[in-house]
Structure formats: C-alpha cells, structure tokens
Image: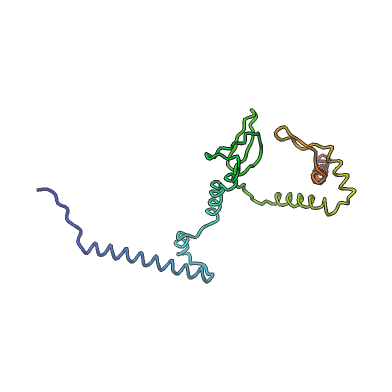
Length: 200
C-alpha cells in the first residue's frame, strides 16, 4: 500500500483563515487612523510609525534619488537639436567643452572628444559657498550700481589688456564687469596672503 497524505482538518483551515482576516482588518484600521491623524496635523504614536512609513510616505533620500533618476533619463533638449541623429549620436563633430543639451563634453589630453550624461550636481549650501556667492553677486551688482561712467570705462580699458583663461586653445579679452569682479576678489585674497606672511 502506498503512503497517502491526510488532508488538514477543516478546523485548522478555518483558524488560519480567521487569523488572516484579523490581520487584514487590523492593518486597515491602523492605516485609517494614520490618515486621520495626518489630515488633522497630528503625529502617529510610536507603535504605528513604522507601519505608516511603509504605507507610502516618501522620505528625503528617496525623493533625491528620484530627482537624480529623472535627470539621468530626461531628454528634452537634445530631441530638438538639429544635429541629433535618430540613434542619439551627435552629428556636430566640432570640438567643444562644457554642457550642450543633455550632455557634458570634454577633451582628453590626447585631443579625443568625450561626452557624458549631465546630472544635477549636489548643492550642500555650506557657509563658505553662501559667502562666496554673496560676494560674487555683490561685486557683479556693484559694477553697475556703484561705479560711475568714467570708472566703468577705465575698467573696460583695463580688461581689454587681460586675456581670459584658455579653453580649447581659445581665449579673449575680459569685459569691464569681468575685470571689476576679478579685482574685487583679488584684493581680499592678496590682503589675506600678506597677513599670513607677516610674522606674529
């Protein structure tokens, strides 16, 4: 005679079914309470926080990852570019450096052109960053607000004698505003270096 497995008694099946129904009802009550508290502006108790967090409340790290994922997959600028092939390849073969559309182009020391996908950079907004941005904005705004016409003309003449940093072998004279901002940054840096060299 072969071995025949006996089916589970109906009592055990009904107990398991009642347990599943009880868990589902308890989960529905917890979600309903959490939704009512969020609508009233109240916080959930400590025992229900883990349950409500798993119910779909997004946190900051997940939202940042979603933003970066959208930045990687965004295709809005290059689709309208006349130099974009149907395969996605760029037909403009002129050497370039910097961002163009959804890509960032750069040239390696051997002279070969490469590109990578543009991704939104991180902005920690540290105290040093905010201070430098405020100084840059103040110097750029002060060129037109504080300087007279004669001073702006002298800045333009002085900037025409200075060349910008070369990029892809190309360089040009500075404008009057660029020269003024450079001077506004160079004077405090020179004073700080002079103070650092002075003996105590």
